[in-house]
Amino acid sequence: MMHTPDTDRQTTDAAASRSTTDAAASATAKPGTTAAAPGTAPGTAHGPVEAATGPTGTATGAGARAAASARRPRWLLAGGIALVALLAVLPLLAIDIPGVLPGPTYTPGTLQLLAYAMLIAALSLSYRMMFGLAGLLSFGHALFFAAGAYGLGMSLEAFAPASWPSELIFVTSIGVTLVFGLVLAASVGALALRVTGISFAMVTLAFAQAGSVLIRRNPGGATGGDEGLSLDIANVPDALVGVLNTRNLYWVALGVLVFVYLVVLWVEKSRAGHVAEATRENELRVRVLGIRPYTVKLLVFIVASVLAAIAGMGYLLLQSGASPRVATADFTLTLLVIVVLGGVGYRWGAIVGGIVYTLLDQRLTALAGSDFIAGLPAVLRVPLSEPLFILGTLFILVVLFLPGGIAGIPQRIRTGRRQHPVEAEETTDA
Image (tube, rainbow, N blue to C red; front, side, top):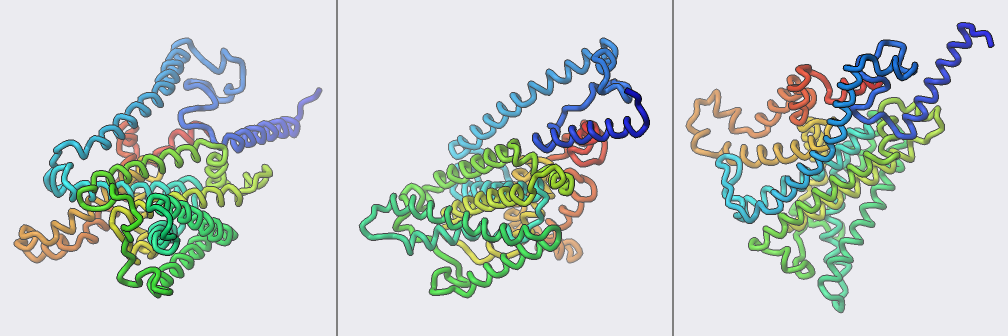
């Protein structure tokens, strides 16, 4: 058979099409895997094994790197389990970090602060899955957090037959709230995902504003209006009520964070997660391959929203109530800042960002009212007495000098380059 330039071009296009199809089925190549081994000469990636592997030394180096890459997940798993175990026993220890924690780790005040930080981290992680994985910039994620908090509070009051035991009422209320969050997420997502880009952000913002107005209007006295909704502790287990049981609430918050992380990890490693990532990069190509991006994006939207509702239920139990602020668009913007601060390219970046932001927000507020700040000259006292000014400045510095966020610092130290955490790997894979 005669080979002409057109024939070679068609052969190359067919090979590229097959490669794209494989990427969509598995989504994208996993970080660290490349089409050709390091040291391969250009144009020999699909040639004989001898040409692809190169010299013996290069093949040996590639094998060593592959073995190290295979061992890395084990170390990460062991490190994650050890970290969770350390956090689990933290209420039993007497660790005091002046300036960061209000007291030793066994005190109720410190445990409540840490529990709140972990719930915000779980909420940020769910938002990161929507924004970082599927590329959906939503301004209404706080609506589902509020749906979890207010939904559980109203369910405990409205759906509580007197003949039922309190434990059954509590579990039933959680189930009702989850169903409500699921239906709300499916309804909002089905409408908002009819558009893309900034139009999608504006639609979610409209839903968030409608929810915020509804909460403040206090229809039928159900939401408490501007004063917020108080938790009805009559049907809440005694182990989750009171200052003395803050330790149990801390463990509940830790469980919520671990659960959200595992669900996010499962979604990202699944085929749907791979397709969502491919859609974020090139939606048109995914459509050409016969895959419906709408369905996958809706699935990611619903999962992230339900996870936010779960975090909202934990927030209600921890704070013994909910305020209208948790339903505002400003709260969603705070989540966006947290995700960018921690690092959009990393799952654990949202966790780090959530914990760091919460601790800074709480401690800077206490520092702003201290005698030390009051004794400073006006040129320093005025900006330092505004925690939002300091947090905004920190956010600008991170965006300018740490594009990968806090979680991208180790990657930048290793590479010595200012780049997105997965930029180099994606370039190699391409």
